[in-house]
Length: 254
Image (tube, rainbow, N blue to C red; front, side, top):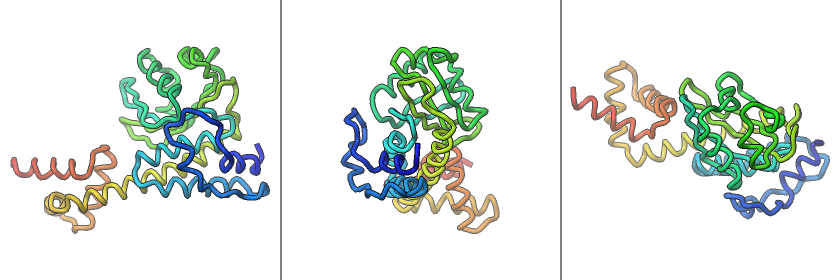
């Protein structure tokens, strides 16, 4: 797909669907001349992502924009995958995505999703032929393209685009998807830090106690102790105030 066509897809009117995110939330997307390149389309998407106030709203925007930006995409969802075949959908464009991922999780074996632990991008060319694609084919979804947003040893956050025709996602779609998810990841990290800082201000006394404990234990200054607390919160996927409460509670028990 040419860049002009891509840009029209991002900025043009929406095909009526049962989106969780209303199309009106993106009515201010500007119209650009067709000659603008893909970088301009990604800039529009990045601006929308960075205007979201919370991590959840960032992910809701991401799935909405993925359908318009990624060639071939008709539906999209974001899932958190944990070790032991545990997966939950946290953002979606419409109910077919929730059905696909919920039913697939209920089956137990997940060969398609398991490949994401070893590869940042996984494609399903045809659910009627690929191993583990029975649930998707039963819902009329033939193609899938999954891209990691976050990853650690215990948990993956993945954006997946779906299409009703086989072979919908080629190399161009994959490259565009990787560029787009890079922007999503940055926006998600920024929203997470903003949310954590807001919580930190609201619970500054508790944070201050935890910071003081870390300063003493680790022999570091206040800034270093707070940065260590934020990093641990992100790594453990625990709210900053809850982690601080744990640290203070453990210290009081000593």
